[in-house]
Image 1 (cartoon, chains in turn orange, cyan):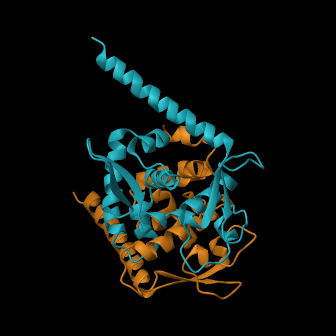
Image 2: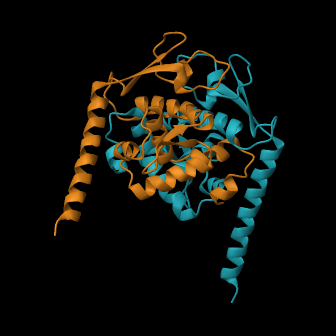
Image 3: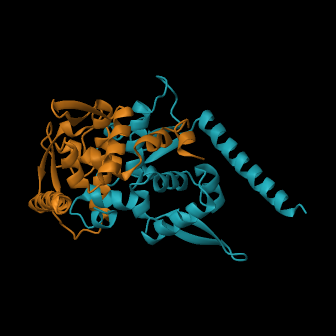
Length: 176
Length: 176
């Protein structure tokens, strides 16, 4: 069976996986959810090649998970925003987070990379099954998130290393 | 960044995705969760090549998501069972299911492929955010599942087509 066939299955899981069952897609949604909207920001934090990222973003736009908004006219530059369809993958990310917390090989009592507090109840949430029952699909709009110092440091290191890489590339192109 | 680096991230989502952020892995877990324990059963329902499936099952066993149990000594044959680590991916599958139900292009009021009733409360569940708050990780042990006629039919068709394929292969090998 190909994934084209899976996308025709009567199974809801198979159809969802055929579109979004992919680590890059979900990592991009994590970044967009964290407010990274520009191509190079997403590239720096995911470490994707620009070619792979461009193809994936285009696919996600076609699938209606992301939409592009012009933020600079000349040259044209776009920001990526999650649509409701994209935002609702937050429930999948929350489930992966809980699993990573329990089975990701972290030392016990490791501070989570992002602390999550449910806005309405004020409860700290580690996993989907700890969420109060709700009548609307979960998204990160329902929670307050604070990034840990360790994760902030990791993200800054990635950003710096990405910028250095670009600088080096530029220099080597300009050298005779 | 490679996925080897991602598996070292302080981010719980990144670590989880580095191990289980993959459609085949999740589809195999769906099958094992539905009671398909043998190589050929899983192959028939996922449509994976035997080579790809063998590699993936080995990886999942190494990661501690599945364990093999001998069910026939001669020739040696194994069944695959989910470990607690594997079973807890059910929360991820439930989240994908909800997303597929809402965004998978189904006609409104389409009967889900698998109807889910929460054992303890008796409530029909469509999505993780409808689950009552719980103090233990969600797994499909918490629910009663009934497969729809349409999904049963799709599964039987896959099984039959897989057996026919094998039969044809055998005949062509035996022909002079």
